[in-house]
Length: 162
Image (cartoon, rainbow, N blue to C red; front, side, top):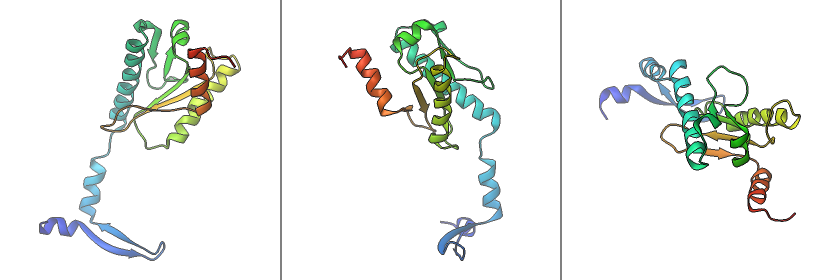
């Protein structure tokens, strides 16, 4: 570590939380702020994630591209809209997609559940099962859904009697 590196970080003691903390220089703070993602590039990341989800559904479920619509940024409602043909093959109709985990996954999943409520009341077509698809940099896509919805979807697909 050279002298510049040493000047960036100092160790101090926070009297408020009674913990040892790193203290960084103003120059280092400016450098870190400069690396933050812009609003435009954040929207591009989200759009790419939505497109990837749509592409996976189209390919895996043998759907037509017009059956799975990735909604443009700024439109209200769920991020992926499905036609009737797609809803017959995919059991989670209230879809939310995020590629930024600045908000908690719980907050984003709550948003998907709000879409599901609209489906359950009949305002929007769908079965009212929420799913959140999320990722962060250099990770695969992950999904968050309730265990009950997962079991119900598997039961429907395998046609087990109740």
